[in-house]
Image (cartoon, rainbow, N blue to C red):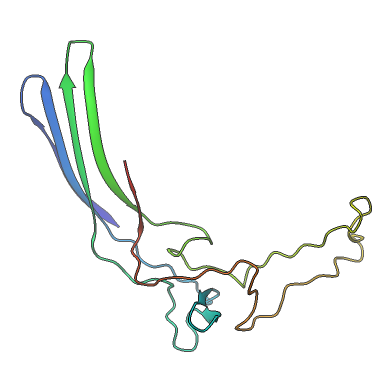
Length: 160
């Protein structure tokens, strides 16, 4: 959810100023079946979202995401205009690798089976691979690419 105010002021015949403020409210994401987990640095295990007293979202809601906008346009000649601007943009990051959405690991796992000699296939398709995802436990997937989260961090932002 976002709201903004913005306006232009013609300071002189050649100079136009623009100023504004945008407020962004990025709600923490949840998953309907609580299929998400984050790595707890203190316990060295996975905390499953929505289970055992751990909250459903992986981060807290932040209300203070204000982004200023400033700009100016200066007409040097009838064919040349100098423009400059600044803006801070709050973004809701998407994807499994960010702390702003609920990480789906270990519910989404990637397993692979390599060929032993780089010539023969690793397995016959009719038989299937001999590797399988690991079962869901507090230690599931450690060392494979788990994600830790600081719940108090706010939304991601970009300055331009």
